[in-house]
Length: 415
Image (cartoon, rainbow, N blue to C red):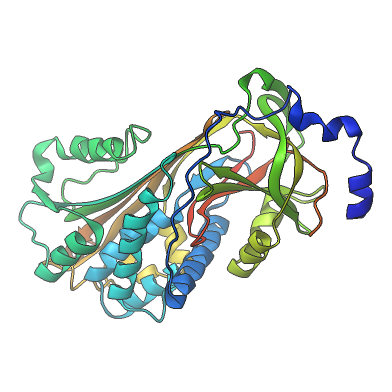
């Protein structure tokens, strides 16, 4: 059906829905303040584009089509960007390449992370963004002076030395993660994951809470059928509204942009077309494809249904990051973190814990990335009417509008 035909096929009663009660947004009557302008140089915009490519590569490598998942690529970028100041040689080159920063120096990455750390929380008073970094050192080990200074200057990290064998350090680390994610991530390291003999733990925490620019009316949320990838069905609370949103579509998916607050941040939902799966959609995602999707978005009336959902992820990132191209960092015989501290180290643990809640009011999401450093010697167009019913598995991306930086990427499968 052509766009013109689709537009002509809209019943007049549907066109009038924006002025009626029913599946409409819950307005507070206040106009959000305009978003401040983010000045980006060409090289900074290229860094965003390359880092978004890392986001898509990461998600493809970690994707499990049977499970709902959420990841924060930018949290990994912060953790590795900070650690990168302690890397050298091939280890540093591999980290840079995986993050999409092959031709850049550690200081270039530092400046990029610093800008995002200072800018993102200021863009929208109705959207809360918190970014924090920290380093815990085991007693008897010392950070190199240059590394320590850069961690403070660029990442606001305040390294703390503790006796990891005191029986309390894991609780301290977990409390830090909880405190910096508004208690969304209460446990970063499980008991069996914490090693009292580790040299150091480096952490990044990201917290996001945004109110929809167009909220869903809770009275209109009803249980409806959601069809999973294996064709089994379940009942889910389905939110609904009829409003104008930015929309486009590709051969693989419908793409809908749901803004938060003043529009600085948004959730873009990629709903597979009939006959396509979330794996099919993920396989096609590249920076260029993402830019085309965002550039082709056009405002049009949308009959929207979206599940109210929560999901979380606890993932070991070592095999994922090694396969993406930085295996040396995890190999005690090859890792070169000679600029990190007073002993030779490698990454013995790298994981991320993330969580998301989506409801009628908006979205709350958080992630903590932790990198554990072990001592090497210890190892061996025209508007048209759109029906967008997210009643089968879909992908979603939470990003910042002006820079395009991806903060979270995930999928909801009904599981």
